[in-house]
Image (cartoon, rainbow, N blue to C red; front, side, top):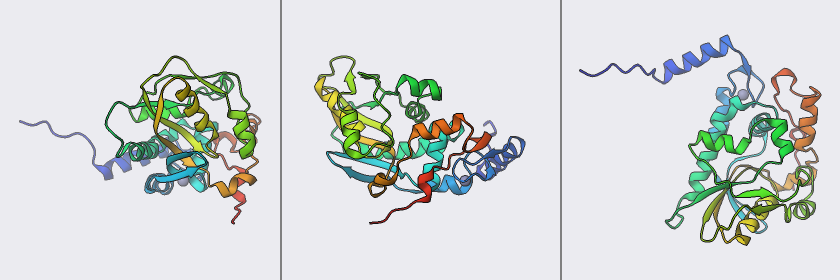
Length: 259
Ligand SMILES: [Zn+2]
């Protein structure tokens, strides 16, 4: 005799989740609608896009999302608004970029490497955003890099300043001869942080086989995105944006610059 399958089907599961949404209402991290942590429409945005191959000076990467619209708001709320309840669809999106990055690589062991957070960022957030998403994908990163000095937060700096700021900021904890890595990060802007991570791995004898990021910031906007994660966090500390829900509505959403 077979056990009856007690797992609810998709429709029943949606109904159950909606019931939870009624019991414990949350504001959607993508659009602010009172719903679940990520409403159906924003979930479709996060999960509906195919990973894109994106290029930066000296660096190529697979990006799950473009850092704009509901995706940008969801990532901002997840990273800097404490909205870890949005980790599910974001981790699914990141998993898609990781799969795309790994596809077609020559066989052999590849380890996942992330960029370590500053201790100040860890204190402010209480969690490492990328590590948390990776753990939801069943991936644990190799803890091989560390910061050589507390370098100023990259957000809000221009491309040249970012490169100068990033150079020498990371070092390997130990020799890495022969080890291959998939570099994973959350938001790719100019790519300088990941270039620095690759440099630090190479100095220790390691190599980067591919790069995957959750989202890429379209470059044409970076000259105008003077807002920084620090600014968002400061605002959060003051309760200045998103109110109790922590939903982020970064100012750069209001300004789209086209070439
Ligand atoms: Zn939404």
